[in-house]
Amino acid sequence: MQNKTTKDYIQLHFIVLLLGFTAILGTLISVHSLSTVFFRTAIAAVGIYFVLKFRQVDLKIDRSGAIKLLSTGFLISLHWFLFFFAAKISNVALCLAGFSTATLWTSIIEPITYKRKVRPHEVLLGLLVIGGLCMIFLSEVKHIWGLILGILAAMLSALFSVINSKLGKSFPSQVITFYEMTGAAITSLIPLLYTLKSGYLTIDQVIPHGWDWLWLAILSLICTVYAFTVTIGLLIKFSAFIFNLALNLEPVYGIIFAYLIFGEKEQMNLGFYAGTGVILIAILIYPILNKRFGK
Image (cartoon, rainbow, N blue to C red):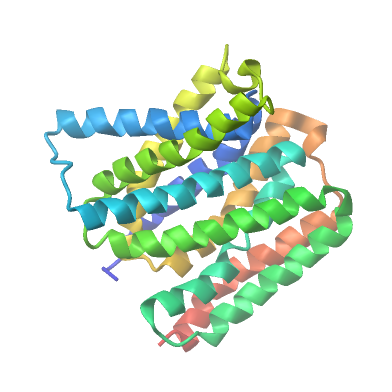
């Protein structure tokens, strides 16, 4: 890992702030979650393509590298589908609470990927997050599927974060973004066309209209192209675990945004806020534990 500066930490938390807004945008967009993922990634791929062409960046990479990047795009498309679908079938707060388990998943996936020993304090923090989630689950049983899908989205997020932390050492971050967004667009288009042909979805559920295009533009260009490109650069400086630990602030930002925008619909009971508080404790004590036991 490279040395981190104050600017890097500020940038990290700004990205988390942007990501906290993505669930809001996904809820505001009226089309089906599968369609949201396709248009988000397609617009992002086209946008980053023109940016790279303007900067005269060479997009050619070897076949093996292209397969790796496009395949990672599949994981990203599946992650975003689960994430947006969770927010739509429950609410933003529950979706983001489930997403906080990214810390636990990373504490398991990262040691396997880098072939290092599991750090007990990272697993401890992951278990603390599970404790917080149990409190949320017991208080919000009626939204169980939103929480479960949020947890699955977190697992995929942890997986492609670890993958990108390795890929970022071999390819420029903007090139990675282009190929992964292209892969995500392709892999989300296939099931989208199938659901249209089978009659499961109608044209009105697939084609954005009205304000959808504005929300998609913000989601694609700011919360995806910009955020994703910067994220890959940050994953070279920060471990995937530290990055996903910071991502635990995403529910806080997202819940605040959701309450301001959607009002009473996003009000939760005491158990939810207590569980979220436990998750935040994991964030606050990580630097202390890492300083003591990290080495």
